[in-house]
Image (spheres, rainbow, N blue to C red):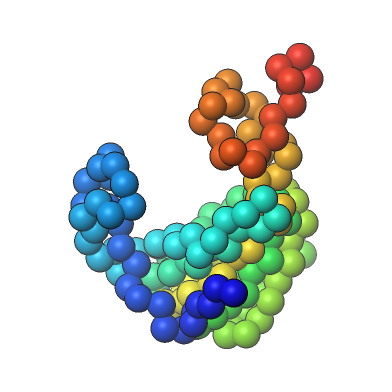
Length: 145
């Protein structure tokens, strides 16, 4: 079993030099900026925690996978084709693959995002470099793209 306390995660960090190799490369704090932290990634599911700064927006977007989003701390405004909903700590939302949405945090917020399956079978379908996709990704043959 692996365990995470989502309300007590250490401050997010980024590599001091983005191109530096290895997970042990020198890191610096990235607090106060949108920081995605991958908790785990398997073919069945990927878990990511996002820190959103005050007045930060994740503009209208969609993902290839089904997305489950839970507000871990703070509040966000979630906008979809049906309108805008204020979501507070503990709220859970489900988005079908390619369902458009945007997120706005009026004050700092933390959200947990689960993508399933990870990656979706069509995530890298238009990639010209199959060697650059995750090992568990599937790419249709070129003649099917």
